[in-house]
Image (cartoon, rainbow, N blue to C red; front, top):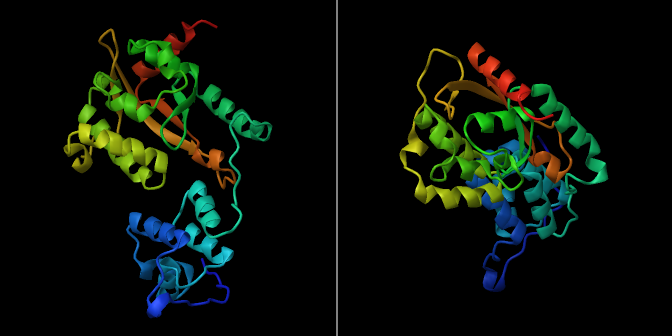
Length: 283
């Protein structure tokens, strides 16, 4: 992506010293370093000189709104952090942040409902960027019952990452806990680079978890996808693989944070067991 910068005014502090980094410059540098991208690489992505980028980060140059958009886009910054950076630079935020209950979010709610209902009797649920569970289908309720957990487990307020790793949590039901927990933890650490809310939860959980989760390397198996292999309360087994659905080109902070995780039965016994469990739920 290429962008043309507005005229740049270079300044210096007392005695010719460089000024302290400005809030937007500091935010850009933090985002860049968190993603392990050098100034040179970012400057090449955006089509500006490395010196120009350095001046923006250190406060020697004031970036135009267009330049900030280009830099934030190249850094794949979440919409909320884009808004914060624009505000720090004195510009209006680019994206609104509605609640899911807002009238304008009706198409989003409808799409989520359709995705969840269409996936029954297999489990599917809606998460935000901090892994908070916002909504679940009947297949998820049935799965909780098969694991010996109350349906209230999927009520509002559940954080899936905490629920997995807490003592006696969801990880206790995993047959292949080492593989699945390592994948969950490594994915959470990657996503935390893009989500301040998730970053706080990851930092909270990190001291409680074995270090091997962060370095566990997956091994090739008989199937092309990692399976979530669960033990039911009755001693049976269920096998799933998962996929995610997100909204394309979201222009709202809340919409951008949402995703649906779909569990697909990996074998016929799991498919049959889930169908029976959902059929047995109250209407």
